[in-house]
Image (cartoon, rainbow, N blue to C red; front, top):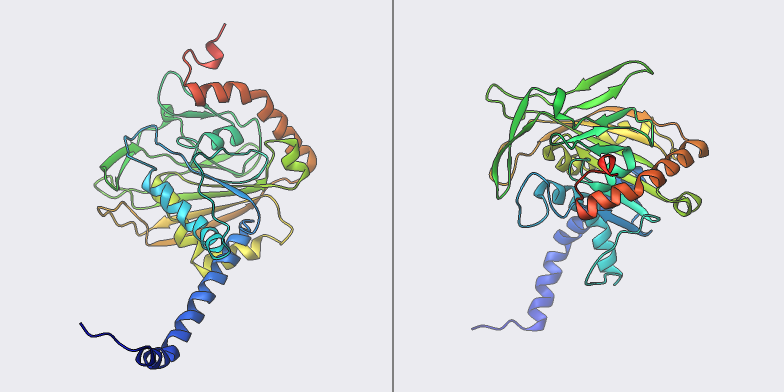
Length: 323
């Protein structure tokens, strides 16, 4: 076996350096772009954040996290992990407990993410699968619809390590004015396979606790109408045109807004159905004043014990059936 001398390695490094420098500049540039994209969503990983991702899915038996949720988590958390690793800030612990008074990034729609149910006012339907929207916390321009009782269409998509799954074709509900709503349903092809999906990003002050409000903490919620939309977060964060569109619609001072992204050109493959293109459908501002957020905080406080009992113990009878 030949062993190269340090001098030879030094010369080789010298020859490679002109080629490596542009690569390094590109990587640094991409990292800065990712930082700017996350800051647009009010995620600054130099602050403390809890990234909350469902550890299981209610409708699938998986060995770990749902791959679509995991893809979204990596899209938004990888820069934070890289920063912490670079500055020796990573710590491995036995268990993690979410602190509701911190900055929160909540991944997943109400179907799978308990904190999304608590934040946006969804209740489990005891007579059927799914959740009904109560909406007693925040008045949302856009929301998920996960009540199957008035849905008739279905869609199919591939989930990694699981195969094809069939689900109700969950839509988003858009509130166009005080009295009018309309549904944005993902499109399917002639075989019933998902051809588009929706991603809903909601940014607002953390109203879970008074302390969180007083300290200016933030909730960032990311969830698709299906998992394909959730994982499209990666495409959104890397699309300069989409990010510019959001930037032009929200000011640096905006604390509460929603971004609706349509994910299209979906490719069904063994690693999961994934979009290859996205476009920003709308950017909507939310009412933002102290009364709004303290009203939401009080609504969370009223429902918290029933929510905790249901999520932690899966109690039956359901809260409204207790005597």
